[in-house]
Image (cartoon, rainbow, N blue to C red; front, side):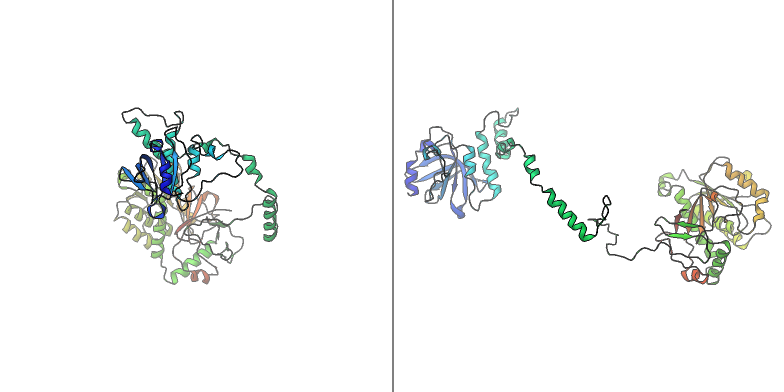
Length: 486
């Protein structure tokens, strides 16, 4: 039967106001809209507010000729007296009737059967995208009951807003929400025996492991600085010394750092000085490392900001007339250069070492204050005390009046104490420290030394080897590292 013959059978008054879908083939595409006129004489049908391939047309009305129509579907019937609500196909393809359905074809083509779900079941046009069907289904939302529609909003444009809501949200998905999820049926799909069988086979291939011991898993993500290639086993004892039974420390990364005797320490410094690492260089390096540690203990970047210039920290520096005292004076000079208020205590001596004299000359060019009497030290607690009173060689200094007075002042002042290059275990130390900073390799320190730190003063590896020490630097990217007792 031709398309013109079928269109003549359709009464124009029966289909006005109905929503239809017209397939004009792959060239013209698919149109949807409301029927406004059917002209039997010219064999044309007109739609208002048309949609072309799911997109609203810019023109208010589109007219189609029977020659261009390949398929016509009824989406929604506005008038109940329509004689046929089934899909009217202009092409020679017949209307599909489900096999074994006891209902006659007349019932299938009745207006009561052409509901919203029937129109949605016939929307799967070959080659038509899914997004088009979602936009197309929005037409059917207008036929829902009053209890299913979107609640009206107060205002003048309620009708227009409801129409827009139906176009946007009327996707016809409410019917699927009534079906409960079948938990038991989905759980039955999980085959526990097969999964555990695969796990047992994998364990037998990779080697048996005790139950309860988690197998090491390869991380799915790595840091940007992490090595993912297999490396050699880590050797934590990279420093060995000729003497045995020495006290050992370890770094944060687990490297073992053994202590050395005072005699071996002095021999190491002597060989380094013979190769060019002079005392002046060593004093400068020690002063830089000690001042950097002191600045960190004073607060670091949180304390030393332009907004805190009115709260300059105060450091009391207690020094003796020896090399350890010269190291402390060098540290005080660097602290004063970083806007720290430094008070240097150094007793008056008729003759002092040249290194002490030269460091004192440089210190006096800073804003630091030098005192020789304990009466000039502050009565109130300071931020930090740096103790450089002790000497490795001369133990008789412990009996000097100025030493006992300075030690008593440091113990009575409630400020924390940093000991710089303290003597080894067995020698007296009157000031109890919270931190101790050793040079190159630590001495076996006493319990009163507090937490031990180690600084790098720049001794080359071959110098260590020359005195019988196998040495690999434990400092990494730092010049001052903490040491922990095992």
